[in-house]
Structure formats: C-alpha cells, structure tokens
Length: 308
Image 1 (cartoon, rainbow, N blue to C red):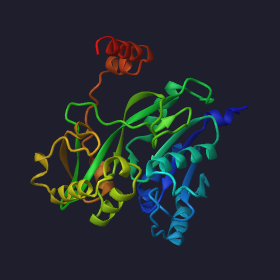
Image 2 (image 1 turned 90 degrees about the vertical axis):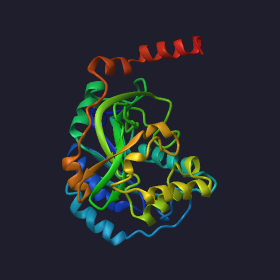
Image 3 (image 1 turned 30 degrees about the vertical axis):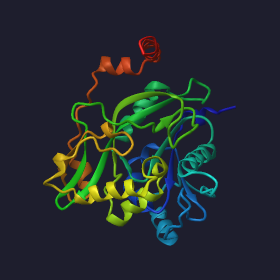
C-alpha cells in the first residue's frame, strides 16, 4: 500500500548522458523543491542509438558531491541502450525504468539535462492544486508546462522560438501515473499550466548539435534521412542576429510548432534566464479552465467526429 510519505513526494528523474554538464544549470533550479531525485545513466555509456560517448566519471562524481548536499540524488546505472530497439523505444524504456525505480505515488517529474525551469516552485504549487497527494490510483493525467526552446547561441545573445500570440509548445513533464510510450508522451489526459521551461535544445556547438541530431530520441522520427539532417544543420549554421527574423514554421517534425525566432541579448544561459522576456501566457483563466476540462475535451472530440 502506498504510504502517506510517498504520496506527498515530488520525485524528479533526469536522463543523464554525454551532455551531463548541463545538469549544473538544471539541477539547482529544482533541487530545493524535490524530495527524491534520480539520475539514470547507461552503464555502458551508449546513446539510445547505440553510439558510445565520452563521459568523465571523475568530474561527474566530484560535481555531484557538492551539488547534492542533502543526498537526494540516486545514481541509477543500467543497460538503457538495447540494440534491438529504436532510439525512441530505448528513450521510453529508460523513462519507465527510472519511474519504477522511484516508486509508485507522489508526483513524478521527468526533466532532461538541457531543460531549466524558470520557477519550479510555482509549477509544484500547480501540481498540488490539481492533486495534493497522488497515490497513483487516480485517473491518469500529465501536467504540461510551456517550453521556450533556444535555437542558437550567436555573438551577442541567443535565438529562441517566438510563439507570437500562439499557444506555446507544451510538454508532459509531470504525471501521477508514470507510464511512458514515446519519450514522455503517453495516452494520459494533458493539463497545461502557465509555467515556463527554457529548453537549450539546439543552442549547442556545431559538433554537439550534429551529435544530438544523430542520437536523440527523436532522431528516428525527424532526421532518419541523412540529406534532411544535413539540410537542417546547414540552415542552423547560417542563422545569426541579422537574418533570424526571416525564418518561420521550421520545426522538423511539426513545422507550425515553431512559428518564428526571437533574439535575447545575453552572454550566458544564466544571464539569459535572469533577463528572458517571458511572454504573456495566451490563455485567460476561463480559457485555461475550459482547455483543461476533461468534459470539454470529450465534447470537442465528439463534435470533431460528427462533423469530420
């Protein structure tokens, strides 16, 4: 039976890989508000696509000693790169194994190393308002903050996705029932909340971005063809402070998901997060309530079927 303490917990899992140094920026932003933290790392130091990568274990352990003063972090090493599975299947498998490791009950939050919450405490308040102490036996749902993707570090700052007046891209970071089918995606009902997460997705060096394009969980979906991968990489290399405004609808999987680019002057990610022009959330309180209503979602689905 799930204990009271388990139901009260905020359990945070990180998939850790070749870009583990980004944890130095992501972990401090959630550490004080997490009860249990899991770092899952492939024991053979292989990506989901089966490629070996360099990993400085000594530097990682030295950093963790000072970054985890309360001993919240469980370093979980296992075989997360099975050769018979696709990159996405290995991604999903690792997330499920990490969730099982943290145990049933409480809110399960999964964060990638390159994702930085701007106000994790506010996100936790939103979770508590939805279900104060999840047992894991309630109706399954995900809670989805908005992503602010960083596309490139240029000479004087960062290029980021500007959603204009559209609803931003959201991702299912938290769930009361941690079951994952495609990365963090599953069949659960999605509740969106006006919390923001900076995603340092493409803002890498040339070599780092090419490696990511070739090995991340979405590689099989978005960049399976080498000419497509090369085309996007060359497009990215051409971007700068002067031409970014001419790019629109450029997400490789769903073009309209990234409608335009914006620019923020900053010398580092830390400076960016301190001064980022966080957009006004486009949904009013009433619209947000209707968007998150299961009954309204059923009605919209029925309406769509009737008139399709």
